[in-house]
Length: 335
Ligand SMILES: Cc1cc2nc3c(=O)[nH]c(=O)nc-3n(C[C@H](O)[C@H](O)[C@H](O)COP(=O)(O)O)c2cc1C
Image (cartoon, rainbow, N blue to C red):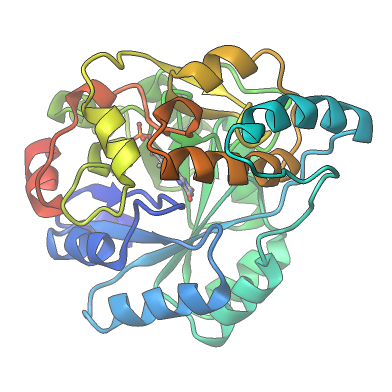
């Protein structure tokens, strides 16, 4: 599937708003492939998005968070929650005082994707069991796995996936690493594609920091079958990126991104702001506990138009991104 695209570009799944059915449809019309982002969604919302894209008749994928909980002690949680509550007091909201757990309805979403199969599924955050991957493939679904190292690619290949998405540390949003407490060596995307391709005989989709035609060309030259674009599409006409996020991406004063687990308890790359400055070193790991802890605070800050407490996910290529339709952006970045 991924080796037969007219345009070797993939619209990255971007949960939390940016990915829309319109973005996925536009990616397909442009000759590439788009992934819906089922993360944080209910199974009903996921199914409605699938129906909308399916009606367009183009191939597409659905991305699912594979549960890889990152534990946190009650004591560490309480310490961080107290810091967060001080920020939340300004908005007169109360944050969860005990860790909230959850698996993003993995089994329910998987059940829906098996009952009503889609052309492709990709996973991030963790590797599902070989049994899950086999069931999806038997249902006719092409299975892609996000990996951040050669070792993770080997594990994914052994579990039977069709393809790996090699995600470099430069990527916007969450890292898909299987070991959030031990981030893999930060390799440039071309080096990551090289080591992953040497490790597994599967098509590789390159992801992370790709925002110019020459960067995409270099990833393909290193052996990638396609390049997956996230940040480059955040200002696309079809994107559902929040107003506060869009404004921050267009703000010339925001020149830096940082890798931080302060928002969700898993490492993710975001535009630097007051929150990342003040809390990156204080924050413990703990997912999804920290996600649920800070979520009401981030929503309240966004509603108040305050970008300094919001998670402004962005990859290292954020200064190059432009407005325009997905088709136009694909045209500009396709070598
Ligand atoms: C706002 C945002 C949300 C993201 N959400 C997801 C997601 O739901 N699932 C996923 O597999 N990757 C997600 N990612 C990571 C992308 O799939 C991809 O790896 C990354 O965007 C590539 O790096 P780039 O942003 O520099 O292009 C997200 C990235 C961003 C910027």
